[in-house]
Image 1 (tube, rainbow, N blue to C red):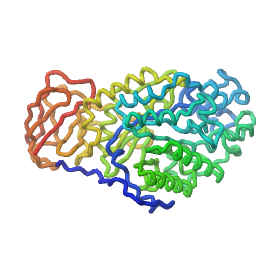
Image 2: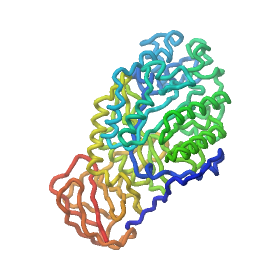
Image 3: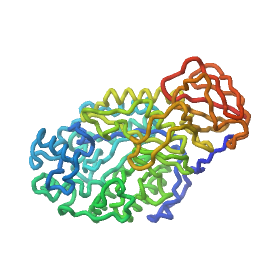
Image 4: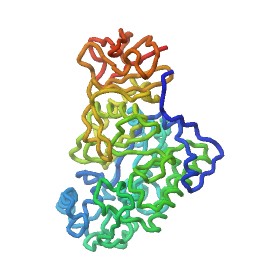
Amino acid sequence: MFSCNTKTVAKKETNITYEANWESLKQHKTPDWFLDAKFGIYCHWGPYSVPEFENEWYSHWMYVDKNNPEANNKTGQKINKHHIETYGALDTFGYKDFIPMFTAEKFNAAEWAQLFKDAGAKFAGPVSEHADGFAMWDSDLTRWNAKNMGPKRDIMGELSTEIRKRDMKFIATFHRQWLFGWFPTWDENTDAANPEYADLYGPKLKKGDFVYPKNPHKANFNNDKYYPLANKAFNDEWLSRLKEIVDKYNPDMVWFDNKMDIISEAHRKEFLEYYYNHAENRKQDVVSTYKFFDFEEGTAVLDLERSRMKEKKTFPWLTDDSIDWKSWSHISNPQYKTTNRLIDFLVDVVSKNGSVLLNITPKANGEIPEGVKTRLLEMGAWLKLNGEAIYGSRTFKVYGEGDTTITEGHLSENKNADNTAKDIRFTTKGDILYATVLDWPEDEVLNIYTLKKDNAYFNKTITSISLLGYHKKLNFNVDNEALKIELPNKKTGNYAFVFKILAE
């Protein structure tokens, strides 16, 4: 068998009782289903989808006027100006007033779930609660929820049923920690200051009531005065909503946005204790994720945002990225990534022991834009043909070869160029080595330099090579320069090309 450096992770042991301390929580093992799945889909969809303007942070930036500490933000100024000109003053039309407009009249959970399935996703789910404080489930803890207002439907409940019907894992993503200080509850010129809506907009804070983060690396994508720390009441509410989601929907994954370090460490540990014990009692294999340093290493799966690793890692990791270069929610002028870019990203991430959680952007009425559908179905068609190199695969001794370099770091994906035919990524499955070429070579022969004669990575004799989607075996030879594969006269598809290499 080809050597695989992926960390071996056993199935969940039985009879474990987790305690709310990091050492106990490190007993939790990443389940096989996640190691095998590789590709999931989620969606930013809520009242912030109604204005279709700039991005999902509309709920925050609409309030950024001269009275806000972030008044020098150009995006905020643009959204604030647009909001007042379009909807009126902030004391008469606030974020709460988008909720009745978020009707979701064309939402069909079965259609969404089938699209996710057809796209090749193995896990999927909605944003459960974004930074706006609006719960997308039937909550007993807040009146501001999708069952009571807006759609007047249990969005999470409907999607969890339909997603699981199609043999996918159900995930819940949670962003509530951003809510603390998200709305200017100090500003009497806005509806956010009205105590009648405090259960939506969050606790009353003073203007400029910000503190320095304890670890500046957690705020390296913004200025030092990044956020206020949550009080006990907010911490308790954060945890209670998570427990309600776990109890009602039994998610296979609970994913977290960053900024969880405003939540007390005790509350974060208590969540993992509760979730892992809940799953243990149900004999359910679950995953939780974190960004930066929000959980201790080894207690959950590290997640990146709009970024990826330069090199292969020994631990499994996840990256979330949006189908739109500009926004995580639907906007009127989307800038969708090409299908080619999305597939190359997936292949590159998987070769480095990662998985991809792709965000899509439904409209407020529940429609998924045609541009999004097209890309998802094209990804699904590619995975239907080439998925054996992705699903259930493990890493090779090296992730690949090629000229394209990767810039790492939070929100760095827009700094990375498209891949070329020189970029080849490896995965393995048992005795099979897959070499995926990220564009069709211009020459008649494909050179894989990593697999040259007497290379350092395996001492097998190659017996056959085939191109997935092509009906004939390919001629090849190995010399001191490279493994050289004779290509068909015409390319066999539009995206990444998978060569299946057998050896003994």
